[in-house]
Length: 310
Length: 310
Image (cartoon, rainbow over all chains, first blue to last red; front, side):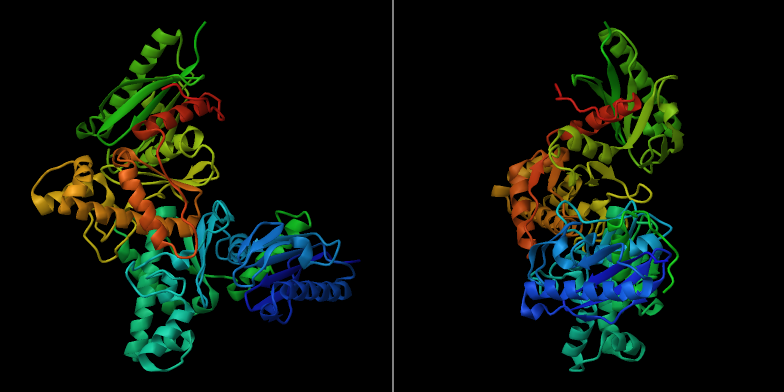
């Protein structure tokens, strides 16, 4: 008897992660691969479609039939049916059907918001309906979760917390603005700012580890902590979230990062309690697991929410 | 034949505005009166209830019957049925029934969010569903409108944009934090900061008018404009609104304030267009007109949306 499953894909700017997820919540993760964006947007679309086909073939062999649906988390501006624009990959107005073999129902989602959806349905935010999902990676963007669903604003450009100004006359950001959160608190910022002080190309993880014994690592990490506290104070006052879920590669640093951010956030708020800070439950797999939720929506199962077997 | 109408009340910290609004949209505005909060929260509740009674009596005489419902916009933390907390008035957990004569259906709303609801239903935001309503008064708070409804966050503490930090190490705010938007851009801040420089107790309106010919007025107004631009840049990046609606007493300054804010907002955003800034269509009556919407909800008319006859 065939097992019901979906194909789930998290497409980043440079690489993508794929998986198969059964209705009962069993997850099979496949090796990632490059998107091939350097060969142009059409090649990237073809690469994604062929990866989806391979995963569907693998699923047919394992589970005895075609997938029930496909979910794809992609960067840029996106509706459920069209990848409207990505500065990173260069595509415009690509219909979801272009990403999948003919006949498979499929749904698209925004990469960071799809990660937020996964944290909302079966991650750190599963018991609340209003929170911020903030993955700290090479860059920073967030998913504003409202009533259990990530909110992209009027036209899908929302969630760009990484480019909100924390010190409005601060350091120049690659985006052209000054003092953006991302300029101080992304993994990329830690690496760049530490290298500028020391000439040492340490990773963000190494910088966090060195901070107790290395004044320049401590300085760079301290700026990141303060920038996060300022930004999260604004978010809290504006949107009163039940919690803040920190994810991404840098988020995996855990309490050594989250504890001082929580302390500085409380210090920045005078007349209200801060929301609790939680580490992402799903880590760097949040986007792929959110894509599985989209795949089940494509398959006509909008309330799918099993206990995952990772 | 009796005319169907509701009683609408906008309760501020120090005074309240009341009106009668018919189903077809005719608005009768009554003289405001003090809340009497200096005599304690119970006296304030009694004052409100007696004002509602008087308005209902006036309505009976004009329209030939009891009101169909009562809507009340109140400060603090509030649900549709309970005024949970107001630091300003001092009450806790007051049921909506305490504010109205027995037998009248009534609904409560948050003061600023109720103004945002009115701008959404028949004001500057009537053609869009996602925007910020930002009344600039003695203080500053906003209504984050999502999908046509003001959003208060997980526990109703949202919208406190006046206390988001624009210059995190800036001037001390009365709230205990530093560099809050309200410290630079409220009518109260203009008055206080201009008086500190000149000893002259000019009103915010006078300071705006003097700015072209008075360097210290221009400096104070310039800081307010820049603070608004920084704060609205963050809002735009985070929530991607269709527009920003500026209201309140200071918002009535119009283009002399809005044009430079729009220019500085555009300058603060590098990789996206700014949303348009619009002046409130309803001005200082937004709260009372929003309360009329709540009154019609209490009366079982949740989609009430006439052309207003002011």
